[in-house]
Image (cartoon, rainbow, N blue to C red; front, side):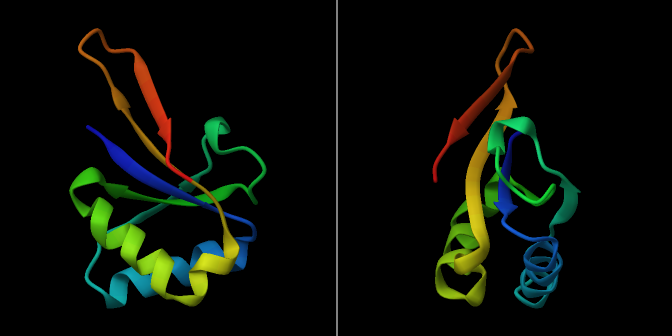
Length: 88
């Protein structure tokens, strides 16, 4: 399964993001930040890739944009190898 992951500069931004996404009806999970999103606080938000446009719009149009360190897409290829695309 593919995911969009948003890494934040502080834990408070990550927790705030969880509430913002919930109010907008976007199901997310708070996770430990993957190492590919270096330089963050250690907490990230993960959403299914089908919510990619909604996630990006939400972080671009809310106070969350000031706390973002990275946005990455992650999944696995046909051979089961992890693939990561950094989009911000």
